[in-house]
Image (cartoon, rainbow, N blue to C red; front, side, top):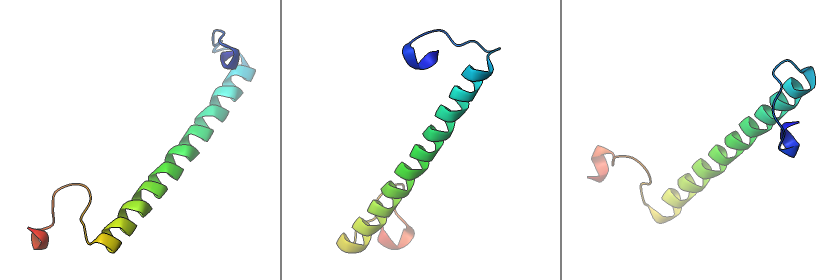
Length: 61
């Protein structure tokens, strides 16, 4: 089994289920991190008046 450091057997339904579960958990974690990062950047920009990330909009130049 992959979770104990063994090889992955592509023909095994149990291994397929475990990999699908890990993939779903990873996707959820990525989305959670994305939302938290964007929220923090928006709050910092609003509180400090800074533009964070990417090229500055024309009005800030």
